[in-house]
Image 1 (cartoon, rainbow, N blue to C red):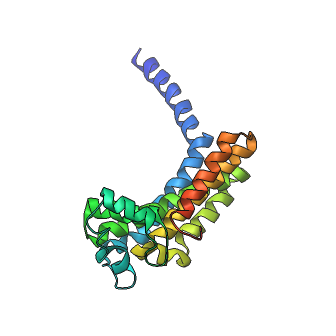
Image 2: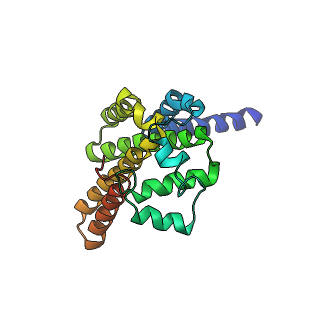
Image 3: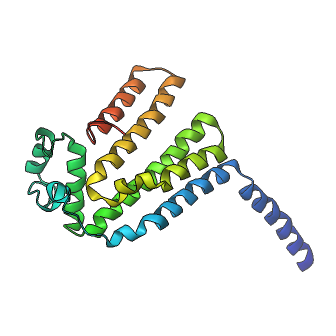
Length: 207
């Protein structure tokens, strides 16, 4: 009886394992996970970087509207001021939130940049995969975006948060546009416009 029971257990385990590793959703999840792991591994040293005197002082360390965190006065200032030659309220609010959570711990501000870049890379993979249906090609393009040296400045320089945020909303707008194109509706188009507007509110020239 014990032998029969173990045989039944084995016959039930094999299909479960096969279905897990042959599931299409699993093979779409793994490349995204690899992109996140590779991005974090590559950029984790920025956790030890300090603020720099090139724009970080204007954006954070000497900006009295930002360095003490979020408040109503800072919220109003973010949407009304054209400071540092830019109007980008979402970027100001992002820096203020970091200061609210981490004060002037530069490592944590850099960590936020790394997380945003990793999210952008996965979003790019997902957008390309949905548009083309090719997992391998989408993975290669997203991995190139995630690890290419051209993006180092945007991740390792806290003041370039605006580029990461604008890219986030740009990719979301692309995904929403595909959603709209499949079944055009006013509400869906409004969502595309909103996401694109949020990208412009993070950086005047959207990434």
